[in-house]
Image 1 (cartoon, rainbow, N blue to C red):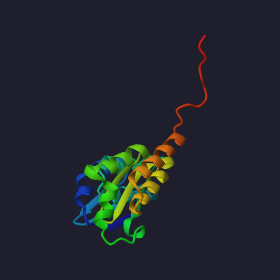
Image 2: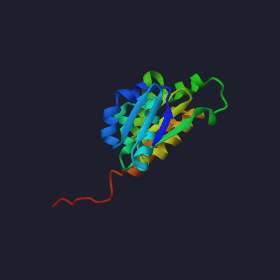
Image 3: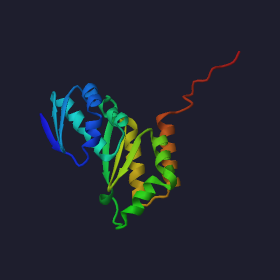
Image 4: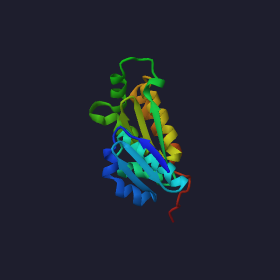
Amino acid sequence: MKTLTLTKPKKVSENRIVLEKKLHVKIEVDGRRVTINGNEIDEYLTLKVIDALELGFLAETALLIAEDDFIFEKIEIKNLTKRHNLEEVRARVIGKEGRTKELVEELSECYICVSGNEVGIIGPAETIKNCMHAVSSLIQGSKQSSVYAYLEKQRKIMHPSDLGLKIEEE
């Protein structure tokens, strides 16, 4: 049994039934206090999912963490920059009208959520490292175009379109 105190328990209580069903645990919400009952692995996954919900991910996206090949990582913005105006740093990650965030998500096949001084990333194990590198680069001041080029290059390595198998026409 795990007990934790949340700052935003509303998301957990709203999605409690779905979380219990998908994660095979029993969740009790009492004010800001949340109790999780289940086996150790299910409790651990539930803690990760609740952490993602607290950060701001949608329940459907947070539940991807329960899949075998998905991982949830957080990046502390303050750990990667010496800039004091963190609002500008967050704006660099999000981009104008959210376009930078969308492009990084699309190119890396990951989901990104920016909340406060943290950036949460949920994605497949094989691509999350590239997404984390891209977000870290944006936080540290790299140009968006350089980050997109990096992700496109990594995507071609991960998903080569031509494997050298050509069908010869007769």
